[in-house]
Picture (cartoon, rainbow over the protein chains, first blue to last red):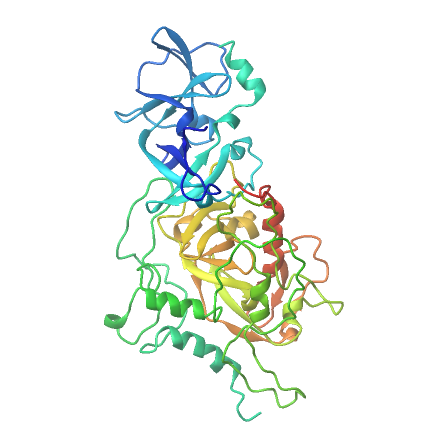
Length: 161
Length: 313
């Protein structure tokens, strides 16, 4: 994560870059260093027997990439595909996957000190994806911890998709 | 004793400060009220345009909360506290909970002729020191975020700490039901706006984060929280304000805020067995409305938050 941290005068309060996207009316952010690229919506081939949070697979320059249904993962209602729908290709420690989002907004710069802990008062596993929240540009950003998007078992499951 | 005023009058003074040129009264919003301006936001709710001050002339009526009127907001916050401190992160310290005081700055009231003591209402300044951070936390120090909620304990006489003597309560409506809360346990009253942001994966009684100038208030769907058996889906649309709880970053969403009243402990039928519904302190006899144990609600919310004890993001 070295390149995404812009050292400002106070090294104790680094500035981090986040790619923001829209999903079901709210704005979310993910670490820019984990974003490989952003694709326009393309046809996703469903995979029989795949977990419910998997939309299917796409061909990315000869590589098969699994696309996750982010709304389903976040327990949000289903949405329609529009011209703004995008597939964000993200790279975690072990895998490269795509996540489907309503639209991609911009890259924002946030100080570590600007990020607040979010409450976790639910029993849903999805709540643990939220790394924190930050008020920026008159809206609240919900920051997602991509590494927690799937459990170890689920990551392993993807390899068989 | 001659300078002690009627309690009702003294409390009315709070509200007079809000609107010096108007009759300032917190009234229940008529159910037929239609907002002047509606901004549609998908997935959350239509924002309110609030007109809560009862005025003699409609032309003088002003939106108290929805519009960013700095002067009015400042006056509104005086209702609950003379000074809302900027809450900052502090290391873990053991702080004695301040003895109960009536949070009514500048107000005094006439003692009952049958009483043998004079009551002087003081500002709850000691409580300031027990309020802890809800702002962003730096990562430089590894310390734990604790919340100190004043007035949590109940005394051996069966009364809560905040009701050992005359105390003030605020009445508000939630889905048509009137609820009373101790004024001393409240923080601020803020409008619920378009900026209320829900978070996925949370309990169904969690409405979202409401940004305010003083920080983000974690907003509770009060109707679902206290009376899920008679929950009305329209509450989300009708809720206009969030009343924050002193000492914690949580607040209760309400339909409307009514006038505060002053009570003596014997005007409440106190619950003895609070193993069920520990947040219910008792019933206000005259108004036949539930009296909420707000400090207890604050503690319940803190305990429910799995991230409450985490140090930082």
